[in-house]
Image (cartoon, rainbow, N blue to C red; front, side):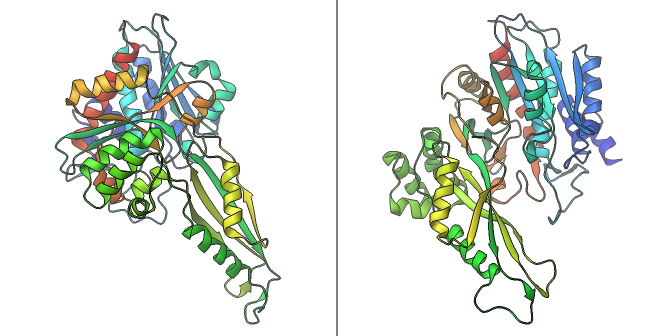
Length: 447
């Protein structure tokens, strides 16, 4: 009933967003969310199809034909979401709820708002004169590696998504904390490499009432994890983050603003004093170094059993100028215990990067200035992982933009992607769609 009321007189992007948010797409059921979208494309006369990589894992592909003067533009968004188990939600995560100016639901920022914006923009292109084909891909499985989505499409249907340029998630339109204005536009031009490791320590096992005094795999593993947790990879400022830090130096308060300004001035070097300040702020710390954090632990199957194996998973996000191999060796040196085995989990490829100048940066800058005036527009580093890494590896220039503007304060408070009570400011959702529309016009309109 609530969703039906919200749909009344809603613009297309908001209507599609509510429909997508109402389907639980944690590790499946993407095809159920995409069927109504497919019908919209068919009704508009736009060729579209649903492809299942496996039962229930749907991928929607649509194509708006252009003159062919330029190679295609791909608009990409994933519609799967991360789990909500263990999180305390104030509203049902799959019943989109508007409250106090925000829309709450799992996936509203990651990445269903982008999917809804793409649908609205693509439907509006029907009948327009375009200099290139515009391809829409709404995909499965991004949160678990893209195996059912972009990776599968590249392997089995490369021709359907082959493009020169791509717009995907990963950018950030920053609004003020009172939601009154746009403060900055960040264009994602690079991302960290995602790599997880398994740490394993072994022992003889037995009854917990008679623990061995010489070897405890849980204690051995714990010591290794403390070393990893306390270690700080070397800090340095990449070209992709320099402007982002410079902008933050103008808006943050001392001593952080001073440390950020110093880091920009001395780039790529970061002094020890400035590093101590920046590393205390999680958002900016992640921009200047590789990070590794323990995310999973496993021991004995019961509380009265000594484990024969103690295991932990450490997830690392590696700067684009560093390597998985180098990070592996550094972790071994930090742990410095031959009794703790370090092995790589599945490798998902390097994050990669794209040019800081060119058609997409120019289009994003022009769109932002047209809509929001003289706001700063600059390149940024995505510290998470997106499907753009697979596109870049396939030769597509994939950039990350944003269609659900939010404040930095919301991110700090955990209201963003993957958090409990994930939310988006309602007043900025349609302007986010208009931003995407203007970027697409810049890139695909007739010259």
